[in-house]
Length: 409
Image 1: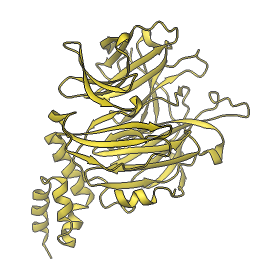
Image 2 (image 1 turned 180 degrees about the horizontal axis):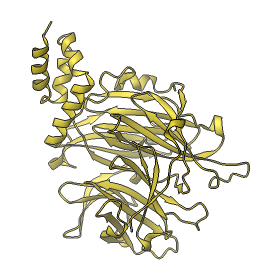
Image 3 (image 1 turned 30 degrees about the vertical axis):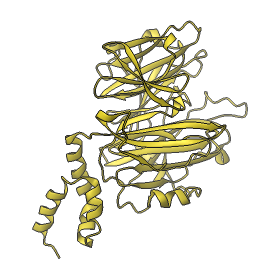
């Protein structure tokens, strides 16, 4: 049995090892397995990995074969080799019920997946760490079609550093007898990986988060585009944020020239900054696809337009910013293209798929999820993902009421 000094020396040595090697080391003896799956060691290993900067990218796209039938691909790349030479293709972690699985977001090497059919009738969710090939099944939420009737919702995923916990946020708008979804305050529930249950959070959110809105995790909070309940057709009055630490909603102003002018408005995060991507003007007179950046977080007057691309180029969606300064964009015809803001040159990548399925992010080499009580290998999960476990419900009145405040000037 190794003594405490030996364990400390092993921990220092192991903390610099790549994840694949550590997974193999687990099989050597029980002492090594206990050390490698210890939460404090996982945290220390993650800190060292993050400091080294990962060279791997994870890329997902979906190819349509027939209506509601296609192939979903997950590929690993070295940053400099994208998109020509993938290092490896991964098995799809969660088979889609209709087309491709919704990727809510990623954090510390953990990717949050949420699959649904018609956004309400059937729901499956999981946390996936591609580095260790492990999946943790998320129980069914409390707010479902069976329990509440028709509703729409938005999702956010991130890491709460105050409790060392990964959380999935779900903001659900249920309708009244007249199918009015905007006058009733939403039902907000949070899934905690540490607690393995959903809990309801009381709130006084006075804005409606669009059901198709993307989310962005930044500065410990999830962000969405929100609108006043009775605004005209269109979206985009404010950015709504939800802090995973204090579990409170706040709002931030968006550029005045974008307020309630677009049918769609996406929010994203890159390199510590918040981004806005307006798309499809209400009046149909849009000539440009543009991306905006908030140079100073929370300061409305720091919004700046990064670049604009002529509508004639057919750009439909921002996919990702790369560390080399290039921007990946999806065209209306499903082509993935690369744009250089300095030269304003657009280059085809040769990849074609469903424009909404494209996803690219840095893959952090992480041990997170290993040793969780309900972890599955990808193969085990693929054979059992049709079953949905029941959720535990906890009402957290101790958190108090959420307050809404306006940031920026």
